[in-house]
Length: 497
Image 1 (spheres, rainbow, N blue to C red):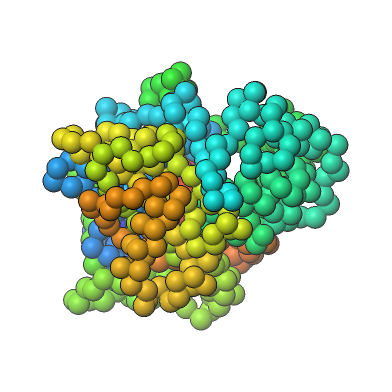
Image 2 (cartoon, one colour):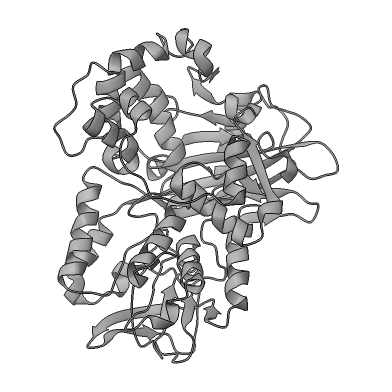
């Protein structure tokens, strides 16, 4: 029997395993095994003839837990804290796809929706010139001049339609927005957005790879406004099942789960454990993968299983050197995530949170007011406020030094100082948690699309049974990573799943 293996039990690897199990064609797979990495670079690799001859799907995770960056702490008093992604967006084909998976897993009753009319959706802030400023929203907000901006947002949008489209095949996000909407929006709003989404520098990040909808709108319609109105290109067809239909009907802006977003990988793991097709292994370290006449051979530590992050580039043979180099050239950033709990209601404003442009504070990315969108995650007895402070990213080493030597006490102090300065909170937190997320977000720098195309061309030219999936290639969001697992399985099996 041929065996399909998934190396790496992050959300990408678990999603690929899930779709493999859901497909009736999985028993027809020959000469192939799937690999995924838990080093944020999540890879789906097709291999053959693993050392275990019996299971149809085997998942090998190098660490002690499945789920990757989807990581929730559940305290005994009922409070929930997220150390990675928190709210997941339901929109678009990839959003519907994730909700369909949540539906299939029986988690619909645990969903915590946040609608567009919720205060957390309507109120988002920027910290500029040492003050909190509410981002403009609604027609009235777009028509008026609202600090920290010097002119109405609608004026910039209206003038954008007159800007000629670029002939370049890629451009930095900052350059793109400066050219089309003005330097002020690029310096403040878009700079902050990129720090919140990618923990990255918009002057280096690629608009084509990070925001393909904007790039395609300009290329196909000549204008962002026209692209938004008329569409900027085809998107995958994903029919909406009941939960996705409900999200559209109720106008959800984002959602979480009652026991935290880690419930999603936990539920997938539970589904896989119940399947006769699957074996799950933690502390499983893959040392090397080598091409063979019939597919691939995998070398694994035979007895001593230790926790070790798995990176595809370090396990490929020298014959794949061009691919290895391209993989190693994809930069990642480290983010310090500090969860804080305060007694009582301490927020001066209500909303989702605030972001900080790099011109204001390079090391402080933003603060999320977790108790506002998801009060269900507060402890049920007593009134508390939960916050998450995000720091570092592309500026981590510049401001904090080597991630291997930085002290948690220093990160906690920096986070509490930011809460005091930005929000005027004078009390000390009653509880805290510092998580240092090393190499957690890939950076799509200029030319990223060419690098990804080059890797996939090499794989095809060498006729390697290998597919690349995960946050390092086609999108960093939870929805993107899950959908990349589905897409790769569909391409492998030649059918929908």
